[in-house]
Length: 329
Ligand code: 1GP
Image (cartoon, rainbow, N blue to C red):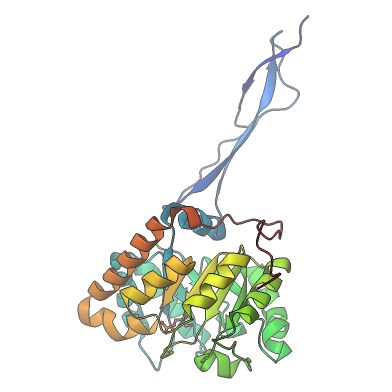
């Protein structure tokens, strides 16, 4: 009897109804078992399991495909807009081509209102909702994930690990995906910098940003966020983005004061993978129903498509790309 393996077959063990509610990429995991030439059945049955990608994986895939993404930041702040208006903003941002929503801000503290705002966004868009936490009260449903932020250049340990400790169990219990994100406040830093006791990174010293960003990579963070502060009159410097991109492999989010197609384009060409806009939406989206936002997103996508060879190879091994040494810089 020849028991040489001649073929493989995959056998589902049980029928499971899975509803894929969201358009996106999914990983198909197939476990196969050999079946033998003599016709004998495999010792164990094969299984086919389809699992949705995590939001993080989907973001990485989309960055690879499109070169750059856009995130619409909606601040669930009762002093700014009622939840229904946030829903309208989301509707227009979705139509304008945004890739995801960040929900959060530095000054909102009403959890019920955050939930109401998220529900209004969800009603009007299928794009992922990612919590952008201003504090531990931001952990609420119905979000798809949370940027699990540590403000590395805060001078106050609470914003580096204290609040994170307090929120971690709530995140675990919610089943929400946590995307560990190193958050660096760049001067001027805005309300985020002031509230988090940050020492904003000097704009003319990109080496300091590189040091923090590389440390974040070595510490195992999955994303990097360079933040000039919401409503900043000057956004993260191009030279800083370029230099960080040269030495660091983390997907890079850039936000704060990005208000024009040109600025967004330059940032993408310099190496930003996700551009975040909040104030621009607040000031324009209801007035022009997303027309000017669409122009900015188009500029991001065109710049993303043109940087084919610069797309990030995201690695988990914390290895600096060859030739990228800080020596002699
Ligand atoms: C703030 O990076 C975001 O946390 C967005 O900034 O409001 O200036 O767009 P703006």
